Picture 1 (cartoon, rainbow, N blue to C red):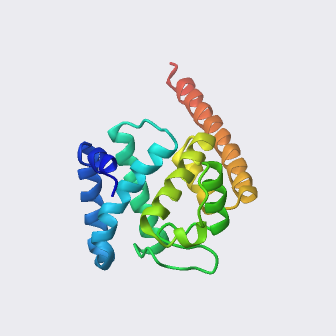
Picture 2: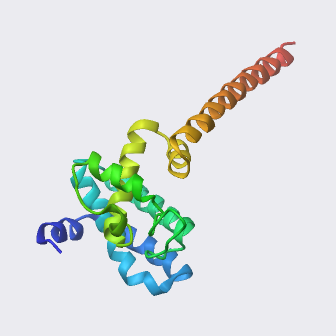
Length: 184
């Protein structure tokens, strides 16, 4: 491991908390990969931050760690070498998506083989999240986009907007009825 990366990782407070979170979850579900994942999840977050030139607070990095752990648990049950019909690796990313995000960040590597390496898959996953958070802003919207194609996510998010407007209207309507009822 690069000495600079090692120094960065050992001097940040959120890394220990991230490692504890990874340990708690992985030990319960897939202890076979514990040692490998405890190191690679925080490292991949750091590397993605460096590549995308993002400055995040320790809390933001820890939130990113929790999201990475939750998605890895859901997508692959913490098995970094799992293969689906189309998606690969710890975060079950499509090779075409990985190729797109790597090209978008000026990285030229074989995306398909890298998805089966936990550190590289984590970097790809975090770069993908960076891109989605810039576009969609909320965790809900990011997760919708992560789990669907661009066309389907646009449709789902369109329905979500309509539902939000209806909920806001109902809230206003309910408040005005309560205010009206409280008038003597």
